Image (cartoon, rainbow, N blue to C red; front, side, top):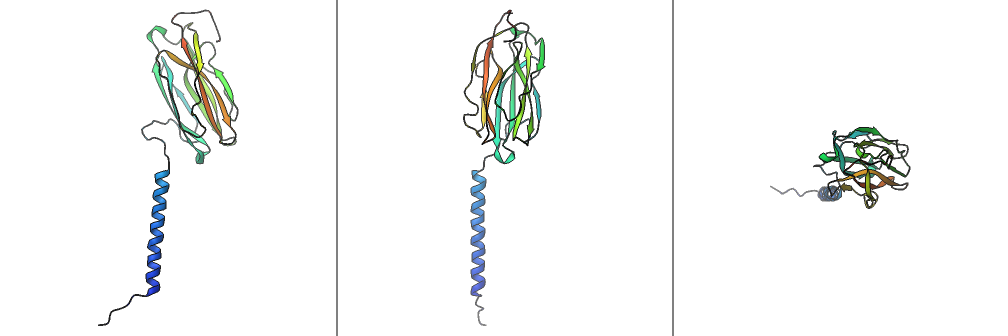
Length: 207
């Protein structure tokens, strides 16, 4: 019985198809391998382009802030926050309030009024400017006053990078922030205002 010789054109087309599949597979592996994703172990409190309202439990202050930037999602960020109880010597918060809103698309500087410390943050996203407005939730502890304040370095160090800030020393508190906004990257860098608080009541208001 004579052997059937495969059609040359069919063989070439089959080989080309396998080669194309191989190239596509390699390209997919490269894309997936090179793609960054938000850390799955972090509890993100928002979805991209979604507003949020975060408040520490009573008697706690904000001590950790993490964010993850995604250009394809309206140049927005995912956000995660951590709180820690204040020292027993500070007593209970005697008053808490929301500060004025800091508008989207603008640079701004704000500290908690009335000697307060930051105990929460809320934010809304605006597609028109590809940015968020921000508002601090502040709490006052009796008549304790801030002192020895300073600004952190930029968080993140460069626009579009993942942002990390954790308070390294117990007894220091976030009292606000100074931010810059890039009209090109549509992203924001933060310098957090860090202060210690007196362990006694003082006579100074609105610091």
